[in-house]
Image (cartoon, rainbow, N blue to C red; front, side):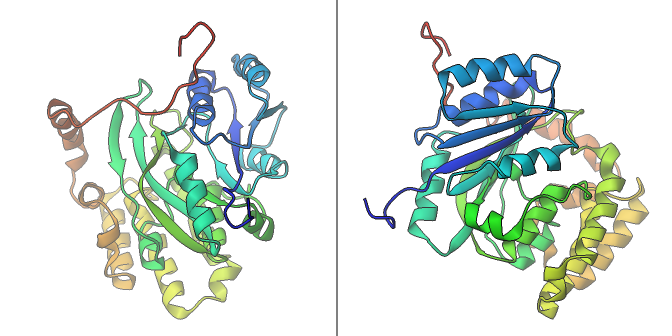
Length: 328
């Protein structure tokens, strides 16, 4: 088969620490794909909850699985160690508490094969509860700087894939930035062309103890501002892109406000709107309403119950690995 027709090999990098409760579902969603991953690299941070036993058991059955368990300096260090071990053509970075959906790898691989100039492919995401219930679907717009800075680069990690050659060009995650994934997506996007797959690719697990949570909002905020202000790529970008990036610093208040104050959120959204008047086109109306209307968040549980009654919620959909004895 000619090189141009060959499906690229997919390597998945998974940082993990004490996630035994979710780890099997994450691995099943990878190893149960119709287009098998070339390589699955799990960098475990010396877990003490049974994760290593799970990894050892899966590694006996799947030769693609490589895993290391040792102390690390956090997610960025684990991801960078994993990136250094990649031998595939396309990379996905998956948290060990998240999941991929059916048929994702074959579709992603075909996109990269059919569009050689594209180095970054992404899709939509669903928020998933710990029991597997789908809480919401988040649709990500087609790529433009207006869209991605309108979202303050908050795009779903598990629904992103990129070429290995691009990663080698850009480098790894910056562990000095709390939202090191946001920084990485921006750096990658300045060096390639992006393409959206208009389907849900992954499920993002939602629970109070996850790393992206409200009590870390100020840290995420401060580091995002630093990320924008220190970006060499932005310094060389056209004025329009620089303006949108500055707007994104203020628009981040919708998701991670620096203070729990509606006045603070309003003030920053006003400044963001002045710099990026069309930002609302790229954000769900509920996100904007929750940021602007006091007490609106209390209506969300009612909205979720109405969705459940209408039958719109559903269980997660991924292909579980068939275990010995016919069970899943």
